[in-house]
Image 1: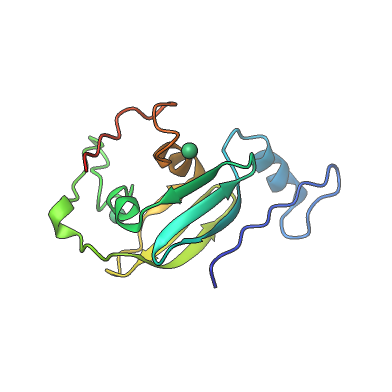
Image 2: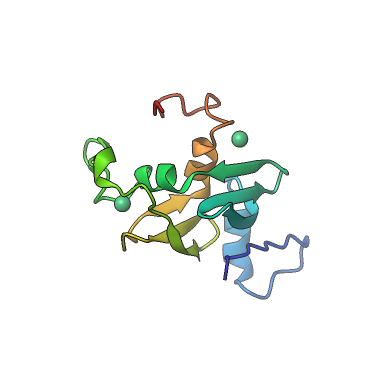
Length: 140
Ligand SMILES: [Zn+2]
Ligand SMILES: [Zn+2]
């Protein structure tokens, strides 16, 4: 399954899949929300956002951007991952929704502790960089 995101917004009628209180709380955040999470090409991840914007994330770049404590030092925020230690054909084997704010990705190298918030994903979008996340310098 490619993990299809469907988020309903039907005014005062609470959705069936969550308590109204929780839903309201999440709906008030300014987090960008994906309409659909799918694949692009063989391994890449594509997100279509609620505002119609489409972001494509090359699999390996997404793996290198893993924000988990094993890949980024929690105290300093310094990235521990070494570029060359990640296989060139690394790709997501499973994508799970985490609440309404993030996805977790299980990778082909069996790494699976990274939680990618939608906020982070929107910042990682290559065409949106510069609108907030200038420090994602990654030379090709
Ligand atoms: Zn990680
Ligand atoms: Zn973009």
